[in-house]
Amino acid sequence: MARATVLGRLTWRVATVTAVRDETPGARTITLDVPGWPGHLAGQHVDVRLTAPDGYSTQRSYSIASAADGDRVELTVELLPDGEVSPYLARVLSPGDPLEVRGPIGGWFVWRPETPEPVQLVAGGSGVVPLMAMIRARASAGIRTPFRLLYSARGPRSALYRAELDRQSADGSGLDVTYAYTREVPDGWGRPPARVDAALLAEAVWPADREPAVFVCGPTGFVETAAGLLVSAGHDPRLIRTERFGPSGGQR
Ligand SMILES: Cc1cc2nc3c(=O)[nH]c(=O)nc-3n(C[C@H](O)[C@H](O)[C@H](O)COP(=O)(O)OP(=O)(O)OC[C@H]3O[C@@H](n4cnc5c(N)ncnc54)[C@H](O)[C@@H]3O)c2cc1C
Image (cartoon, rainbow, N blue to C red; front, side, top):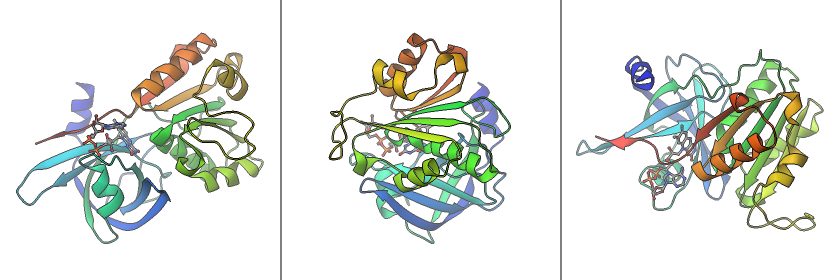
């Protein structure tokens, strides 16, 4: 009901693609110019609507990857080869093309730069997208709130934003990044491919007594497992915000 009420106030806007950039072999960032964009908070998402010449229309949700920056909005879309919408966004859409978007959407899974608590981010796969928006919002606000990111990806080649995360975690501003590779690890990595478990969590995550604000995002199974492990490690469930990237949208 709340979502319906909020969506009722949002209008579809026709954005223009200004750039596309491959982040990995399977994921592409799309930069949009959205005239009249009202601004957004890190963690919010948009709905994207595609309409075929015969009038068939379908929509999906995509997190905003960029920090607020005028009319510019970036999305990062992971290609699901058998998907209906992501192959078009991640392979076909090109600079100059129009794209219908509606947003920003979401008021719970958001980080505001003025909040002082340390932040723990936990990402599975493309679930890193809204968490990257938080990291970028922190950098663009020039603040040093301690941030930790635990990022589970299949391997180094499928991890998004690696160069930017390396840069930001090396700049001494208080961002700490730990990767958990589930299928392939780089040479000399020192641990076999593995999913996030209680031992890794204990190593990489703020202890519960620091009372961090926790944001967990990724596929539904990942989010449920990670949130369960965090609660077992003593984190207050009220401080854990989750976003599930299960199938979204619908058709008309
Ligand atoms: C709030 C929110 C934010 C999102 N943000 C992003 C984002 O930033 N980047 C991004 O790439 N995706 C994001 N998603 C997922 C996105 O909305 C689509 O679900 C995804 O792109 C697949 O759409 P599709 O049309 O290609 O696949 P579909 O045709 O819908 O589905 C094809 C097959 O893949 C399965 N499937 C659908 N979605 C997923 C998924 N996410 N993971 C695994 N299997 C899936 C379906 O069950 C089906 O079997 C987000 C979802 C939500 C709810």
